[in-house]
Length: 387
Image (tube, rainbow, N blue to C red; front, side):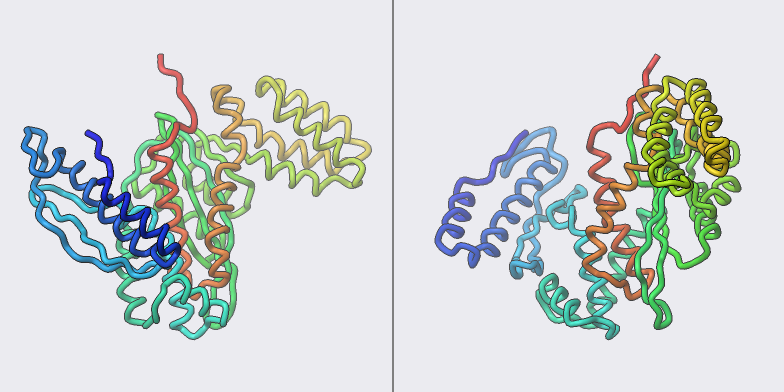
């Protein structure tokens, strides 16, 4: 059953924009949203207005007025109501969490007196109204409840686990400190990826990772066949404690950078880079280890420290050869999480400095929820062969 916007609504919107330009943007958006919500209610009910049918899943029950403040002005909306079924327009929720969290982060900075003229201007542009501490408290309580439910939702079996961390500036006890943001992505037996969790903390690295892993396990994470991450010492210790026996793939991208830092001469770096690529691109694990041994023997006399480092560390990056060939390219690095971190950075850099860890966790979680929802309806990340 498909629904098209009423022709009169389309004509009204076109006329508004053609006659008033940007001045008519708020009213045009208001009419479009009202029409979209009406169409969505018809889809939820399974029948059109005044129609009967066995597929009907409830009854239309009028409208409820709601004013939504936006950057183009306040929108006076008529929210369709339903009796006898669950319904709430997705237009009022989808894609709004991260922007709401960003506004709250900036608002907190403003209310707590740590904002600059730049932050004040941004809050005015984003919120379009004056900000009070009570407004911030009410809004954060509602959003935090929703985001907390997502962070604590039950998990299940996952084939692969990809881990990474990034850092943001947070004001703590009058000082600016680096705060670690830990993110975990899982790939299930159907090949679909999902953001399993996020954690923000100023604690020591190993303690933070260990508590994060314990929370994932407590929520039901099990069945892991591979963990992909870099070789951060705290992460490694926590992983060995919480996921003992699960094979580990060291990110080849990070390992390449680590290896080049041990090359004694600048002119040797390109050669070592090509040699490592030969290891990573080998036909199988046996061929990769044989190629590595040739590289080690080559540098034993001219660069003994480099040779020793390669022999000890590179084997950690060839575990991926145990996976199906079609999975190796995607699981040999944490590049998927690196791209996600770039998206987080793009959104968090507007705030520059967070007033507290709660504010940072709120914004990062909101962004991740929206990304996760897109992944759930998108293509599979990898495909498992069925026998």
